[in-house]
Image (cartoon, rainbow, N blue to C red; front, side):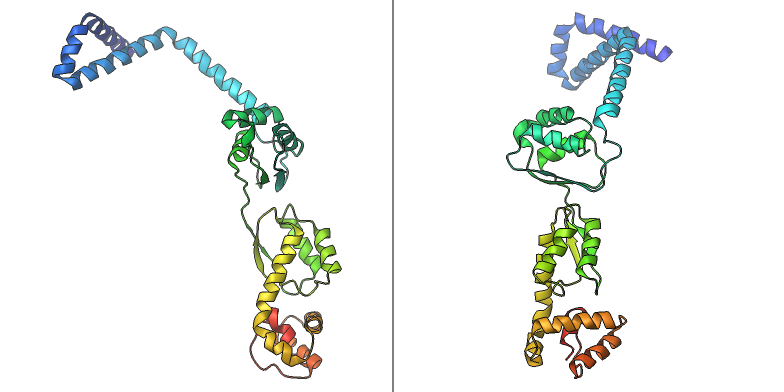
Length: 291
Protein backbone atom coordinates (compact mmCIF):
# COMPACT_ATOMS: atom_id res chain seq x y z
CA UNK A 1 0.00 0.00 0.00
CA UNK A 2 2.84 2.41 0.87
CA UNK A 3 4.46 1.63 -2.47
CA UNK A 4 1.20 2.38 -4.29
CA UNK A 5 0.67 5.71 -2.47
CA UNK A 6 4.28 6.72 -3.03
CA UNK A 7 4.03 5.86 -6.72
CA UNK A 8 0.77 7.79 -6.99
CA UNK A 9 2.30 10.83 -5.23
CA UNK A 10 5.33 10.76 -7.48
CA UNK A 11 3.05 10.45 -10.49
CA UNK A 12 1.14 13.54 -9.38
CA UNK A 13 4.38 15.45 -8.94
CA UNK A 14 5.49 14.49 -12.43
CA UNK A 15 2.17 15.54 -13.88
CA UNK A 16 2.54 18.98 -12.30
CA UNK A 17 6.01 19.38 -13.66
CA UNK A 18 5.01 18.28 -17.14
CA UNK A 19 2.00 20.60 -17.23
CA UNK A 20 4.04 23.54 -16.09
CA UNK A 21 7.04 23.05 -18.29
CA UNK A 22 6.01 22.38 -21.88
CA UNK A 23 8.73 24.64 -23.18
CA UNK A 24 11.31 22.88 -21.03
CA UNK A 25 10.31 19.54 -22.57
CA UNK A 26 10.94 20.90 -26.03
CA UNK A 27 14.37 22.03 -24.94
CA UNK A 28 15.07 18.55 -23.53
CA UNK A 29 13.91 17.00 -26.79
CA UNK A 30 16.57 18.98 -28.58
CA UNK A 31 19.37 18.57 -26.01
CA UNK A 32 18.65 15.11 -24.57
CA UNK A 33 16.01 13.14 -26.58
CA UNK A 34 16.34 10.04 -24.41
CA UNK A 35 15.60 11.96 -21.22
CA UNK A 36 12.64 13.68 -22.85
CA UNK A 37 11.16 10.34 -23.99
CA UNK A 38 11.60 8.96 -20.48
CA UNK A 39 9.73 11.95 -19.01
CA UNK A 40 6.91 11.52 -21.53
CA UNK A 41 6.51 7.82 -20.73
CA UNK A 42 6.61 8.48 -16.98
CA UNK A 43 3.90 11.05 -17.50
CA UNK A 44 1.71 8.53 -19.39
CA UNK A 45 2.22 5.85 -16.74
CA UNK A 46 1.39 8.28 -13.98
CA UNK A 47 -1.86 9.28 -15.70
CA UNK A 48 -2.77 5.61 -16.12
CA UNK A 49 -2.09 4.88 -12.43
CA UNK A 50 -4.22 7.78 -11.30
CA UNK A 51 -7.05 6.69 -13.63
CA UNK A 52 -6.85 3.12 -12.32
CA UNK A 53 -6.94 4.38 -8.74
CA UNK A 54 -10.12 6.37 -9.39
CA UNK A 55 -11.93 3.66 -11.41
CA UNK A 56 -10.44 0.44 -10.01
CA UNK A 57 -13.70 -1.14 -8.87
CA UNK A 58 -15.51 -0.19 -12.08
CA UNK A 59 -12.76 -1.73 -14.21
CA UNK A 60 -12.71 -4.88 -12.08
CA UNK A 61 -16.49 -5.22 -12.39
CA UNK A 62 -16.32 -4.85 -16.18
CA UNK A 63 -13.63 -7.54 -16.40
CA UNK A 64 -15.62 -9.95 -14.23
CA UNK A 65 -18.79 -9.35 -16.25
CA UNK A 66 -16.89 -9.86 -19.52
CA UNK A 67 -15.43 -13.16 -18.30
CA UNK A 68 -18.85 -14.33 -17.10
CA UNK A 69 -20.51 -13.36 -20.40
CA UNK A 70 -17.83 -15.13 -22.45
CA UNK A 71 -18.02 -18.28 -20.31
CA UNK A 72 -21.81 -18.37 -20.59
CA UNK A 73 -21.81 -17.92 -24.37
CA UNK A 74 -19.04 -20.50 -24.81
CA UNK A 75 -20.84 -23.07 -22.66
CA UNK A 76 -24.23 -22.55 -24.32
CA UNK A 77 -23.37 -21.86 -27.96
CA UNK A 78 -19.66 -21.92 -28.88
CA UNK A 79 -18.20 -25.13 -27.52
CA UNK A 80 -18.47 -28.43 -29.40
CA UNK A 81 -21.74 -30.35 -29.00
CA UNK A 82 -21.89 -33.35 -26.68
CA UNK A 83 -21.95 -36.05 -27.87
CA UNK A 84 -19.92 -35.16 -30.95
CA UNK A 85 -20.45 -37.39 -34.03
CA UNK A 86 -17.69 -39.94 -34.47
CA UNK A 87 -15.41 -39.41 -37.50
CA UNK A 88 -17.75 -36.79 -38.95
CA UNK A 89 -17.35 -36.00 -42.65
CA UNK A 90 -19.39 -33.07 -44.02
CA UNK A 91 -19.49 -32.09 -47.69
CA UNK A 92 -19.88 -28.46 -48.74
CA UNK A 93 -21.04 -28.37 -52.34
CA UNK A 94 -19.78 -25.77 -54.80
CA UNK A 95 -22.27 -22.90 -55.03
CA UNK A 96 -24.09 -23.90 -51.85
CA UNK A 97 -25.43 -20.92 -49.88
CA UNK A 98 -24.00 -20.03 -46.49
CA UNK A 99 -27.41 -20.55 -44.85
CA UNK A 100 -27.62 -24.10 -46.19
CA UNK A 101 -24.04 -24.81 -45.12
CA UNK A 102 -24.41 -23.66 -41.51
CA UNK A 103 -27.80 -25.37 -41.15
CA UNK A 104 -26.28 -28.63 -42.38
CA UNK A 105 -23.44 -28.35 -39.86
CA UNK A 106 -25.94 -27.82 -37.05
CA UNK A 107 -28.12 -30.73 -38.19
CA UNK A 108 -25.10 -33.06 -38.36
CA UNK A 109 -24.13 -32.11 -34.79
CA UNK A 110 -20.87 -30.32 -35.62
CA UNK A 111 -21.91 -26.99 -34.04
CA UNK A 112 -24.53 -26.00 -31.47
CA UNK A 113 -25.78 -22.91 -33.28
CA UNK A 114 -25.91 -22.25 -37.01
CA UNK A 115 -26.50 -18.57 -36.21
CA UNK A 116 -23.14 -18.19 -34.47
CA UNK A 117 -21.31 -20.22 -37.12
CA UNK A 118 -22.67 -17.90 -39.80
CA UNK A 119 -21.74 -14.84 -37.73
CA UNK A 120 -18.12 -15.95 -37.24
CA UNK A 121 -17.69 -16.86 -40.92
CA UNK A 122 -18.97 -13.43 -41.95
CA UNK A 123 -16.73 -11.74 -39.40
CA UNK A 124 -13.74 -13.47 -40.95
CA UNK A 125 -14.45 -12.31 -44.50
CA UNK A 126 -18.03 -12.49 -45.67
CA UNK A 127 -20.31 -15.16 -47.11
CA UNK A 128 -18.32 -16.05 -50.20
CA UNK A 129 -15.38 -17.51 -48.33
CA UNK A 130 -16.99 -20.75 -47.18
CA UNK A 131 -14.84 -22.97 -49.39
CA UNK A 132 -16.42 -26.06 -50.97
CA UNK A 133 -15.04 -29.52 -50.20
CA UNK A 134 -15.13 -32.42 -47.75
CA UNK A 135 -14.46 -31.46 -44.11
CA UNK A 136 -13.34 -34.16 -41.68
CA UNK A 137 -13.76 -33.87 -37.91
CA UNK A 138 -12.04 -36.74 -36.07
CA UNK A 139 -12.52 -34.97 -32.72
CA UNK A 140 -14.76 -32.23 -31.23
CA UNK A 141 -13.95 -28.62 -32.15
CA UNK A 142 -15.45 -25.28 -31.18
CA UNK A 143 -17.53 -23.10 -33.49
CA UNK A 144 -14.50 -20.75 -33.84
CA UNK A 145 -12.43 -23.60 -35.30
CA UNK A 146 -15.22 -24.72 -37.63
CA UNK A 147 -15.64 -21.17 -38.96
CA UNK A 148 -11.88 -20.89 -39.52
CA UNK A 149 -11.80 -24.24 -41.35
CA UNK A 150 -14.64 -23.20 -43.67
CA UNK A 151 -13.09 -19.80 -44.31
CA UNK A 152 -9.57 -21.12 -45.05
CA UNK A 153 -10.50 -24.43 -46.67
CA UNK A 154 -8.83 -26.49 -43.92
CA UNK A 155 -10.43 -29.83 -44.75
CA UNK A 156 -8.68 -31.90 -42.09
CA UNK A 157 -8.26 -34.80 -44.53
CA UNK A 158 -5.21 -36.55 -43.12
CA UNK A 159 -4.40 -39.87 -44.80
CA UNK A 160 -5.21 -42.94 -42.68
CA UNK A 161 -3.01 -46.05 -42.78
CA UNK A 162 -5.17 -49.11 -43.49
CA UNK A 163 -3.79 -52.63 -43.89
CA UNK A 164 -5.78 -55.26 -45.78
CA UNK A 165 -4.35 -58.67 -44.86
CA UNK A 166 -3.57 -61.31 -47.43
CA UNK A 167 -6.34 -63.82 -47.97
CA UNK A 168 -9.33 -61.68 -46.98
CA UNK A 169 -12.42 -61.65 -49.18
CA UNK A 170 -14.02 -58.55 -50.66
CA UNK A 171 -16.67 -58.62 -47.91
CA UNK A 172 -14.00 -58.71 -45.22
CA UNK A 173 -12.16 -55.87 -46.97
CA UNK A 174 -15.38 -53.86 -46.97
CA UNK A 175 -15.80 -54.36 -43.22
CA UNK A 176 -12.22 -53.22 -42.51
CA UNK A 177 -12.50 -50.15 -44.73
CA UNK A 178 -15.94 -49.14 -43.40
CA UNK A 179 -14.54 -48.91 -39.86
CA UNK A 180 -11.88 -46.39 -40.93
CA UNK A 181 -13.43 -44.34 -43.75
CA UNK A 182 -16.58 -42.27 -43.05
CA UNK A 183 -17.44 -41.83 -46.75
CA UNK A 184 -16.93 -45.49 -47.60
CA UNK A 185 -20.06 -47.52 -48.37
CA UNK A 186 -19.40 -51.27 -47.90
CA UNK A 187 -22.48 -52.26 -49.93
CA UNK A 188 -21.29 -50.23 -52.93
CA UNK A 189 -17.87 -51.87 -52.62
CA UNK A 190 -19.20 -55.44 -52.54
CA UNK A 191 -21.74 -54.83 -55.31
CA UNK A 192 -19.16 -53.33 -57.66
CA UNK A 193 -16.78 -56.22 -57.01
CA UNK A 194 -19.50 -58.81 -57.71
CA UNK A 195 -20.97 -57.02 -60.72
CA UNK A 196 -17.57 -56.71 -62.42
CA UNK A 197 -16.07 -59.99 -61.22
CA UNK A 198 -13.19 -58.22 -59.43
CA UNK A 199 -12.85 -60.86 -56.70
CA UNK A 200 -9.21 -61.93 -56.68
CA UNK A 201 -8.07 -58.83 -58.59
CA UNK A 202 -7.92 -56.55 -55.55
CA UNK A 203 -4.39 -56.55 -54.21
CA UNK A 204 -4.19 -56.80 -50.39
CA UNK A 205 -1.64 -54.31 -49.11
CA UNK A 206 -1.17 -51.31 -46.82
CA UNK A 207 -2.90 -48.22 -48.21
CA UNK A 208 -2.95 -44.59 -47.12
CA UNK A 209 -6.46 -43.27 -47.71
CA UNK A 210 -8.11 -39.97 -46.86
CA UNK A 211 -11.42 -40.11 -44.89
CA UNK A 212 -13.46 -38.98 -47.93
CA UNK A 213 -12.30 -41.90 -50.11
CA UNK A 214 -15.27 -43.70 -51.66
CA UNK A 215 -15.70 -47.37 -52.55
CA UNK A 216 -15.11 -46.94 -56.30
CA UNK A 217 -11.82 -45.11 -55.64
CA UNK A 218 -10.59 -47.87 -53.33
CA UNK A 219 -11.40 -50.54 -55.93
CA UNK A 220 -9.59 -48.62 -58.67
CA UNK A 221 -6.54 -48.16 -56.43
CA UNK A 222 -6.41 -51.86 -55.50
CA UNK A 223 -6.83 -53.03 -59.11
CA UNK A 224 -4.05 -50.71 -60.26
CA UNK A 225 -1.84 -52.09 -57.51
CA UNK A 226 -2.69 -55.65 -58.64
CA UNK A 227 -1.69 -54.78 -62.21
CA UNK A 228 1.64 -53.31 -61.05
CA UNK A 229 2.44 -56.29 -58.85
CA UNK A 230 1.67 -58.89 -61.52
CA UNK A 231 3.48 -57.15 -64.38
CA UNK A 232 6.89 -58.80 -63.70
CA UNK A 233 5.21 -62.22 -64.06
CA UNK A 234 3.53 -61.67 -67.43
CA UNK A 235 6.02 -63.98 -69.19
CA UNK A 236 5.30 -66.76 -66.69
CA UNK A 237 1.57 -66.35 -67.27
CA UNK A 238 2.05 -66.77 -71.03
CA UNK A 239 4.19 -69.88 -70.50
CA UNK A 240 1.57 -71.43 -68.26
CA UNK A 241 -0.90 -71.62 -71.16
CA UNK A 242 -3.62 -70.67 -68.67
CA UNK A 243 -5.72 -67.54 -68.57
CA UNK A 244 -5.19 -64.96 -65.86
CA UNK A 245 -8.68 -65.68 -64.58
CA UNK A 246 -7.86 -69.39 -64.18
CA UNK A 247 -4.72 -68.51 -62.27
CA UNK A 248 -6.65 -66.15 -60.01
CA UNK A 249 -9.08 -68.98 -59.24
CA UNK A 250 -6.13 -71.24 -58.45
CA UNK A 251 -4.76 -68.58 -56.14
CA UNK A 252 -8.08 -68.50 -54.29
CA UNK A 253 -8.00 -72.28 -53.87
CA UNK A 254 -4.41 -72.06 -52.62
CA UNK A 255 -5.43 -69.43 -50.09
CA UNK A 256 -8.42 -71.45 -48.90
CA UNK A 257 -6.75 -74.87 -48.73
CA UNK A 258 -3.31 -73.94 -47.41
CA UNK A 259 -2.74 -73.13 -43.75
CA UNK A 260 -1.10 -69.77 -44.45
CA UNK A 261 2.57 -70.82 -44.74
CA UNK A 262 4.68 -70.47 -47.87
CA UNK A 263 5.50 -74.20 -47.97
CA UNK A 264 1.86 -75.25 -47.80
CA UNK A 265 0.95 -72.84 -50.58
CA UNK A 266 3.72 -74.29 -52.75
CA UNK A 267 2.44 -77.81 -52.14
CA UNK A 268 -1.15 -76.94 -53.02
CA UNK A 269 -0.08 -75.00 -56.09
CA UNK A 270 2.09 -77.93 -57.19
CA UNK A 271 -0.83 -80.31 -56.88
CA UNK A 272 -3.05 -77.97 -58.88
CA UNK A 273 -0.58 -77.18 -61.63
CA UNK A 274 1.47 -80.44 -61.74
CA UNK A 275 4.80 -78.65 -61.81
CA UNK A 276 7.46 -77.18 -59.56
CA UNK A 277 8.17 -73.63 -58.45
CA UNK A 278 11.20 -72.52 -60.47
CA UNK A 279 12.09 -69.19 -58.84
CA UNK A 280 11.37 -67.09 -55.73
CA UNK A 281 8.31 -64.86 -55.80
CA UNK A 282 6.14 -62.56 -53.75
CA UNK A 283 3.47 -64.95 -52.49
CA UNK A 284 0.80 -62.24 -52.33
CA UNK A 285 1.23 -61.35 -56.00
CA UNK A 286 2.68 -64.43 -57.64
CA UNK A 287 1.02 -67.27 -55.83
CA UNK A 288 -1.07 -67.50 -59.00
CA UNK A 289 2.17 -68.13 -60.90
CA UNK A 290 3.43 -71.15 -58.96
CA UNK A 291 3.56 -73.32 -62.06
